[in-house]
Image (cartoon, rainbow, N blue to C red; front, side, top):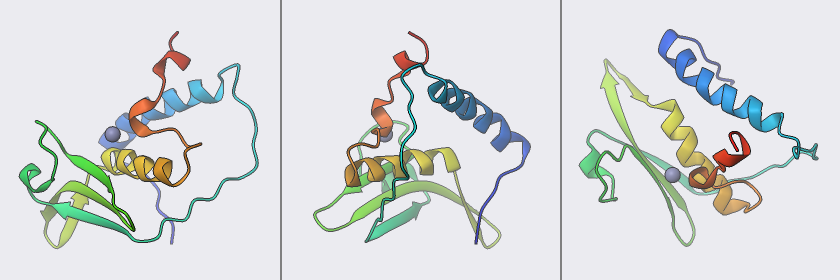
Amino acid sequence: MIGCTASHYRQTGFDNFIQEFVELREHPDAKSFDRVSVRIKNLEVILVDHPDEIPYDHPGVVGLAVGLPRSYRIYILATKIGEKFYVNQAVLGHELLHVLHWRDKKIVDADQIDLELIRP
Ligand SMILES: [Zn+2]
Protein backbone atom coordinates (compact mmCIF):
# COMPACT_ATOMS: atom_id res chain seq x y z
CA MET A 1 0.00 0.00 0.00
CA ILE A 2 1.07 3.55 -0.58
CA GLY A 3 -0.29 6.88 0.55
CA CYS A 4 -0.35 10.14 -1.28
CA THR A 5 -1.74 13.57 -0.71
CA ALA A 6 -4.25 16.02 -2.07
CA SER A 7 -6.78 18.52 -0.67
CA HIS A 8 -6.60 22.24 -0.22
CA TYR A 9 -5.55 22.50 3.45
CA ARG A 10 -3.09 19.66 3.23
CA GLN A 11 -1.49 21.09 0.13
CA THR A 12 -1.24 24.58 1.63
CA GLY A 13 0.44 23.19 4.73
CA PHE A 14 2.71 20.93 2.75
CA ASP A 15 3.71 23.82 0.47
CA ASN A 16 5.48 25.44 3.44
CA PHE A 17 7.26 22.22 4.41
CA ILE A 18 8.13 21.54 0.78
CA GLN A 19 9.64 25.01 0.43
CA GLU A 20 11.67 24.50 3.60
CA PHE A 21 12.91 21.17 2.33
CA VAL A 22 13.73 22.56 -1.12
CA GLU A 23 15.87 25.20 0.53
CA LEU A 24 17.60 22.57 2.65
CA ARG A 25 18.24 20.43 -0.45
CA GLU A 26 19.73 23.45 -2.19
CA HIS A 27 21.96 24.38 0.74
CA PRO A 28 25.59 24.77 -0.40
CA ASP A 29 26.72 22.12 2.10
CA ALA A 30 24.07 19.55 1.10
CA LYS A 31 25.64 16.35 -0.25
CA SER A 32 24.55 13.05 -1.75
CA PHE A 33 24.47 9.88 0.34
CA ASP A 34 23.72 6.19 0.12
CA ARG A 35 20.24 5.18 1.19
CA VAL A 36 19.50 5.06 4.90
CA SER A 37 17.03 2.58 6.37
CA VAL A 38 15.61 2.79 9.87
CA ARG A 39 13.56 -0.10 11.25
CA ILE A 40 11.30 0.73 14.17
CA LYS A 41 10.24 -2.23 16.24
CA ASN A 42 7.62 -1.85 18.91
CA LEU A 43 6.23 1.50 17.82
CA GLU A 44 2.80 2.15 19.23
CA VAL A 45 0.75 5.08 17.91
CA ILE A 46 -1.96 6.14 20.34
CA LEU A 47 -4.78 8.32 19.06
CA VAL A 48 -6.40 10.40 21.78
CA ASP A 49 -9.57 12.41 21.82
CA HIS A 50 -8.36 15.14 24.19
CA PRO A 51 -4.99 16.82 24.85
CA ASP A 52 -5.29 15.85 28.55
CA GLU A 53 -4.71 12.25 27.46
CA ILE A 54 -1.23 13.16 26.19
CA PRO A 55 1.21 12.64 29.09
CA TYR A 56 3.00 15.94 28.68
CA ASP A 57 2.05 18.98 30.70
CA HIS A 58 2.31 21.70 28.12
CA PRO A 59 -0.44 23.99 26.87
CA GLY A 60 -1.49 23.28 23.33
CA VAL A 61 0.18 19.89 23.09
CA VAL A 62 -1.21 17.91 20.15
CA GLY A 63 1.42 15.20 19.80
CA LEU A 64 4.17 13.53 21.77
CA ALA A 65 6.82 10.94 21.04
CA VAL A 66 8.14 8.87 23.92
CA GLY A 67 11.17 6.61 23.90
CA LEU A 68 10.86 3.78 26.39
CA PRO A 69 13.55 1.18 27.14
CA ARG A 70 12.22 -1.32 24.59
CA SER A 71 9.56 0.53 22.68
CA TYR A 72 8.35 3.84 21.39
CA ARG A 73 5.02 5.58 21.69
CA ILE A 74 3.54 8.38 19.70
CA TYR A 75 0.51 10.08 21.18
CA ILE A 76 -1.46 12.18 18.76
CA LEU A 77 -4.63 14.17 19.04
CA ALA A 78 -7.26 12.79 16.69
CA THR A 79 -10.85 13.29 15.80
CA LYS A 80 -13.39 10.71 14.70
CA ILE A 81 -15.82 11.42 11.90
CA GLY A 82 -18.14 8.58 11.09
CA GLU A 83 -16.05 5.45 11.56
CA LYS A 84 -12.72 7.04 10.55
CA PHE A 85 -10.06 8.59 12.73
CA TYR A 86 -8.29 11.70 11.48
CA VAL A 87 -4.92 12.97 12.65
CA ASN A 88 -2.80 15.96 11.79
CA GLN A 89 -0.33 14.55 9.31
CA ALA A 90 2.27 17.24 9.96
CA VAL A 91 2.20 16.48 13.69
CA LEU A 92 2.45 12.75 13.07
CA GLY A 93 5.44 13.32 10.80
CA HIS A 94 7.06 15.53 13.44
CA GLU A 95 6.66 12.91 16.15
CA LEU A 96 7.84 10.13 13.85
CA LEU A 97 10.93 12.19 13.09
CA HIS A 98 11.72 12.21 16.82
CA VAL A 99 11.60 8.41 16.84
CA LEU A 100 13.76 8.16 13.71
CA HIS A 101 16.30 10.45 15.40
CA TRP A 102 16.37 8.25 18.49
CA ARG A 103 17.00 5.20 16.28
CA ASP A 104 19.69 6.94 14.22
CA LYS A 105 21.30 10.07 15.63
CA LYS A 106 22.45 11.07 12.15
CA ILE A 107 18.81 11.91 11.41
CA VAL A 108 18.05 15.40 12.67
CA ASP A 109 15.90 15.76 15.74
CA ALA A 110 12.54 17.30 14.86
CA ASP A 111 12.97 20.06 17.45
CA GLN A 112 16.51 20.83 16.37
CA ILE A 113 16.08 21.59 12.68
CA ASP A 114 18.48 24.45 12.20
CA LEU A 115 16.49 27.12 10.45
CA GLU A 116 19.69 29.12 10.21
CA LEU A 117 20.58 26.75 7.38
CA ILE A 118 17.68 28.19 5.42
CA ARG A 119 17.68 31.79 6.55
CA PRO A 120 21.10 32.74 7.86
ZN1 LIG B 1 9.10 17.92 18.87
